[in-house]
Image 1 (cartoon, rainbow, N blue to C red):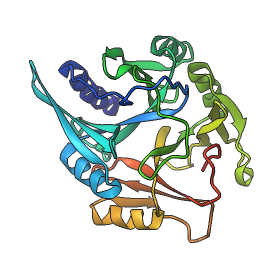
Image 2: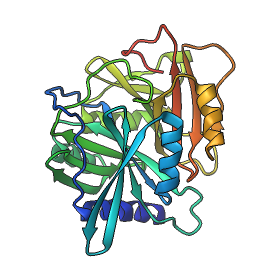
Image 3: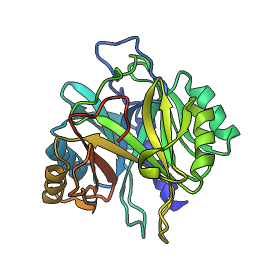
Length: 295
């Protein structure tokens, strides 16, 4: 509960600032891809360290939005891949005894944020913030599912990014580690309209893939059998080489949580943590990988 409180404190600080968040697309498009992950916010105790880490690792650029409030100047760091804003960094205070002082929250596109939040609460989840509208950005909210995993909703006023094979440095995949993947699938089907299909890769039992518009968007996997394991969403970024990116992450002050395999694969994967402990996945797509397949 304490960890949830400090996450909400960081989110409230951003909301209170009235910050003019950047549009998802500029120029605007008319594309709409419900269920697609189109944004990520990093809530961290050290925004400067996180900014330096991700700009160094992915080549993202960073810009700061500042707004005066009754509580002082609030800062929101916008990270961009090329000319396209892709993520934000929000200050959150570290709590006593919290080993992880940073956490990514992914945002999925939905046609109606209010309607999606109603489905969240009807399914046993909890609205944490919003819906909040901003002219350039659109409407967004954050919720927790019945297991406590946190995810964002967004209806972009400038349209969604196109459905294409992600470029290097783009969001490309997400995975939810859940206590009951089948129950999680039913919940997210109601919230975002996903189709939920069994994950046929490597004969994985009790694992599912969330699809929409003919594209695989995310996987639902059983929670690892570890004492401190808890339900959580993990976002993935496409890189040119997971081995090179993993080594670079360590050099920038991060850690490798799951090292890439030495076995050749269509999808090379690794999981890292930034200097504030926020986990993030890396994916390297082989030549045969197509945008409609899942890593």
